Amino acid sequence: MAYYCSFKPLLLFLFFLIATTQGIDSITTHLHFFLHENYNSPNATSITVINSTTSNPGDFGSIGIFDDEIREGSSVDSKLIGRAQGIAPGVSLRQTTWLVLLNFVFTEGEYNGSSLTVVGRATLEGTSERSIIGGTGKFRMARGYTINTFLIRGGPAVHLIAEYDAYIVH
Ligand SMILES: *[C@@H]1O[C@H](CO)[C@@H](O)[C@H](O)[C@H]1NC(C)=O
Ligand SMILES: *[C@@H]1O[C@H](CO)[C@@H](O)[C@H](O)[C@H]1NC(C)=O
Ligand SMILES: *[C@@H]1O[C@H](CO)[C@@H](O)[C@H](O)[C@H]1NC(C)=O
Image (cartoon, rainbow, N blue to C red; front, side, top):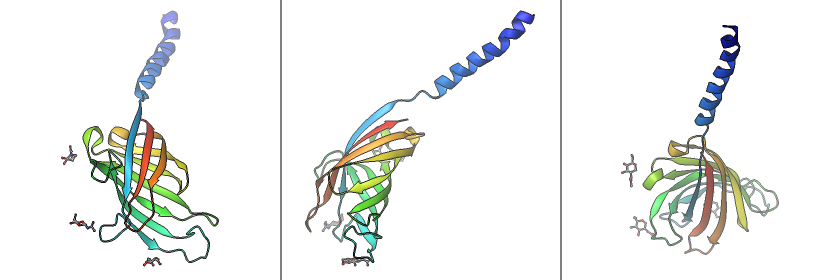
């Protein structure tokens, strides 16, 4: 009997260890998509709600709101798979830099109804990396990062198009 009792805590511990390990099984998903932003009225997907009140070169203090399209490809008529909805205040005194807070909301395929919440820094130069801090639906408990590069920007008739890779542990 003493023998049995001394092993009971160990058995319980092993049971909880197995249960916990199974509970935190996670997978890594890689998504590749393109963000399309149209800043031309009448169908703009992005607006500036507050202009900078300073003369700093970086749009310091401005606030933009966007409801951009996420498409499978870089072409404007490629398949729409969701929206990128968020806010981007200008936060640098020295260069054009935004603090971006956004949700990628997927509306097609396997991830229809799921979303990712992303926070991070955006500049117009080079490649930006941002943190995935959470998600919903298939992406509950998500962690990870996104890498994005602008393909096209500027010009009154041109959309802003950015290529995204998202690496999601969920
Ligand atoms: C704006 O969107 C409407 C509805 O989709 C479309 O008919 C119109 O051609 C668009 N206008 C421009 C300038 O893209
Ligand atoms: C911000 O500035 C732009 C360009 O000068 C102007 O077109 C726009 O109306 C301004 N927006 C606001 C919210 O003041
Ligand atoms: C995505 O999900 C919504 C809500 O469940 C549904 O109405 C819609 O038809 C779905 N779209 C596709 C393409 O499956």
